[in-house]
Image 1 (cartoon, rainbow, N blue to C red):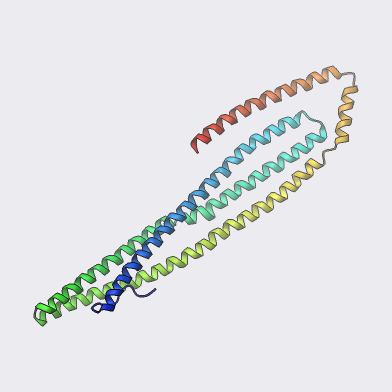
Image 2: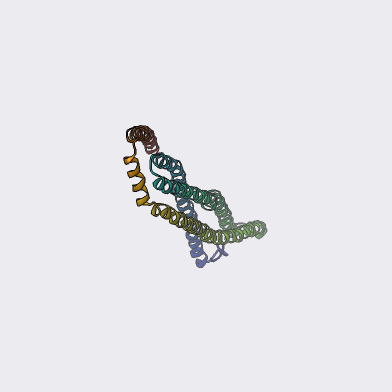
Length: 275
């Protein structure tokens, strides 16, 4: 970045003033874009983390429904379904951990940029103020030199030099801040998105591990064993009482499932309205 303040007086310095105006405009727009886009990205991640958290609660309803059904099934199916439920709930716990990871490693760092960008815009505004003050002093000095005695112009020139020194210090500080802002932004983008990727990789690795185990539970359901148990029930002398018991269990489970589904649908409607 070229210096935002140059020695005035020549046609070249007038072009430099125009360049400085363009630089200030460019820097201001750049800060505004960073503030806008990182704010939107952060908001989208917040929505994602919130929806992931809601899935855990809904998953518990699914687990209960499967467990209720498993209670009415044969030993092998019951064992397979309960193993599936354990894995299913473990998967949701890993998802919640991933949502917490997004909250701490993505949302929190990006949230700080709201304050950072406001601070940078204030410093940029101060840079404008010092520059405009210097330009005003220089124009005043030129007018005095043309009309007033030398001793008066020397006094004003001394005052102008003081303003120039202050402006140069402010400009140098601003340039360093903008450099640090750009470097910090790039480093934060690499770190934050890298953290998200690593967290997602860990979550999906654990998900694959848990789902592999769930697949084994379901695959280990023994059809022949369950069919043998079913046929033994059919052939027993207590067929009617046993069937009555099974029917009662089945009706109770169906009623409970219907009630649960009704409540869940009401909850979903309310959440959809909120969204």
